[in-house]
Image 1 (cartoon, rainbow, N blue to C red):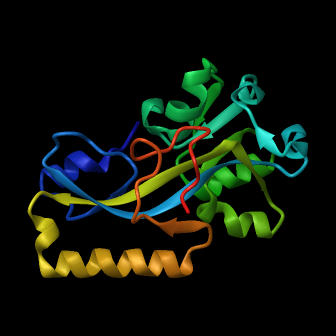
Image 2 (cartoon, rainbow, N blue to C red):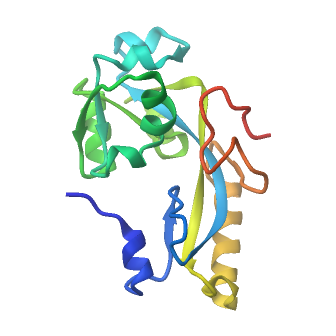
Image 3 (cartoon, rainbow, N blue to C red):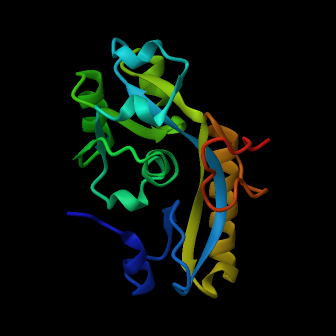
Length: 192
């Protein structure tokens, strides 16, 4: 089972969706929120924990724990594994806490935003590693076209963006483009 909230947004069932996926010609407006690094998450005693940077080939025989979404929507798939022709085993996990527990128990590895796993890493439950030269993505607030100009929507997006940039670890302002699209490819320069 997969859940994609953007069709629910298009149909008026939701008012706003936070997403890193841009659907072209969708009737939706995407406001950049912030940029974040996607990091490999693994158990501290995992053999890859000794490496400074991870290559796609390092993941060939691993089990990659993912949220229940199509793999084509995963940044690690689109911009790291697929270009290298690497296809590790995938296992869907419904929520972040369970996924972190499974990683800590060496039942697999994951690729998650660094700001999401920072507190678990600080506790020593998991370790994170850079994917290639760094895999950066951008989070957007999506609303139906035209609704981005409503004062309440503008205020919410501005407040959420400012709060995230001021208080979330390992995020950067999304004021400048990164890479050649919503997600930078491996080897792309990091946002400044």
